[in-house]
Image 1: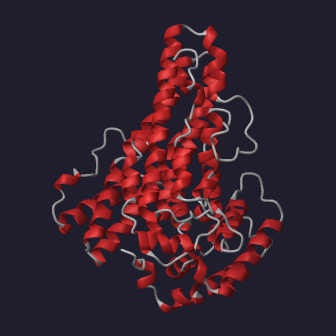
Image 2: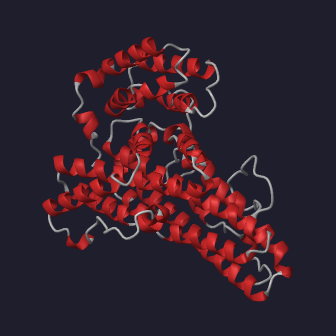
Image 3: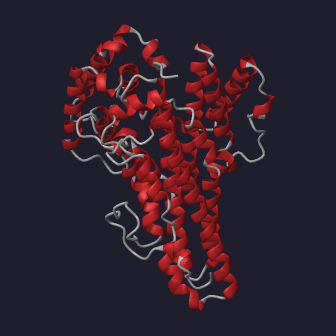
Length: 429
């Protein structure tokens, strides 16, 4: 399955060469002028043409003249007059443009586009934040399934068939991974048929088509557009598109778990153990559904990942701020954790608040809260061990993408508890 993506294999010459994208950007810049590039002109930017070129050749093979134009435009948008109140076009455009020359000093976040998703989440009102965050994860899963189904239609291999089934199951797992999105449509019939009923490529293709169509109708256009615009692979490989979508879903999960921890800290600090337990249970239930996402990643052939790794130096998931934030909010750093502390994390961790509140809470509340912490810890630990196992299978003992020791590094971090104080016998254990 270490083959070209459909975008690379079926691209028209103008997309392969980048001439269509370059012409579209030059025309847009001439039309809107720098004085308006931070306002309504941002919505008119030719994202589609640029993304089509990058998906055809990869960031590493992008037209040099186009890359120069986009880099210069990034500087111009950043230095333009501040956007009017309520207008977020310029910051979003500038943030997206940074992805287009990621090969020059980029990192994990410019590879995945995490700052763009964070910016969209920040726009949501507090009571709608979880729904939007879950909608983003669902949109990523829908697009992943669509990409894989299209590849299966062109080349119905056994490996690709397995990939489609795992992506189909992942979309079905959104009830657990992104429940706020699913609850928005409570009462509607599920668009997914049981996977075991899908015998043969024709039945599988029909079920996937129905599921993608029904799920896509539940996703607002701004989210769909962001998902489309953040698919900028470095290589031309089909497998990298799956890889990008998968880690973008992981990012959304880690962001939500971090929010749950923040709210649990606040609730427990005010003596609301019921609210704190609810937040930790939400986070734990989502982590327990992660195997569906890992199953997609296990379809990555070793030779495909070797190419991806060789072209993504300096872009390792160990740099993930949302992942590190989960651990930073859970407990103070321990000597046994090789992960460097996350700068800028302030306030008490959940473990510290729990230890401080334990003497003042009813015994039954302490026991219940600790049991919920242990459940979350178990889910986090299992996820890390699974990541280590997959990495060992796919890359063996070679160095990871971020210059770490790869699987050996992940094995070491997997053994560090989320709440070391519980393992050491915190009161209430």
